[in-house]
Image (cartoon, rainbow, N blue to C red; front, top):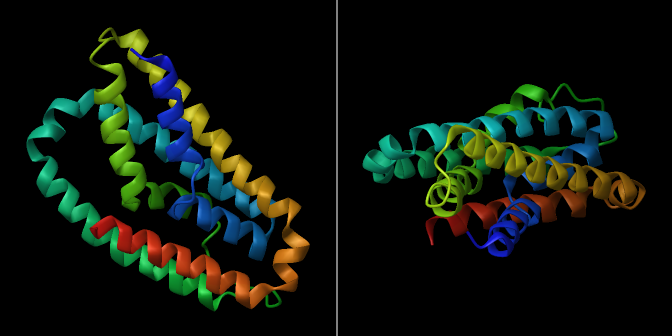
Amino acid sequence: MNLASFIFYCFIVTFTPGPTNIVILSTVHNRGVRKGMEYTYGATLAFGLLLACSAVLNTVLATVLPKVLIVMQVVGTFYMLYLAYQIYQMDASKDSVNQTGSFLTGFLMQFLNPKVVLFTMTVIPGFILPYYTDTIAVLLAVFAITIIGFVAFVTWVLFGAVFKTFLQRHNKPVNVVMSLFLVYATIMIWL
């Protein structure tokens, strides 16, 4: 296995802007670091679970992959557009009962996030299983990739915390830009 390309692939996919990272940034911006971390814990747990499922069920998923991908694209598209609307509507000056920053939404979004689903379904069979098939090696790979994802999510929380004052000062333009990024990510799923 080419370790450098494996690590590069993991870092590029997890650190680049995507639905989860944009929602983390928006959550920190509108609801604070604590809610951002709560969302991050849920997202990380689901990310690791998806990786484990990919490792265990890779053969089964390969036979139904086209059907699964279409369903994930449709459901993910609607959910991402809903999130974009929610981010656009957020007002940091008002106390909100919005659950965007909860552990549960962080957990559930991973299962509807096409970027995460595609990543988890490609990284294990593409980089790990061709070289390592014993259970311990695969579990270590799943754990390592989950840690990389967690570090990426926390980086977005820190980014939001560092720039919180700036982001709050320019609340509406920031929310519009983050919403547009989510819409862009949604469009890119279909191209």
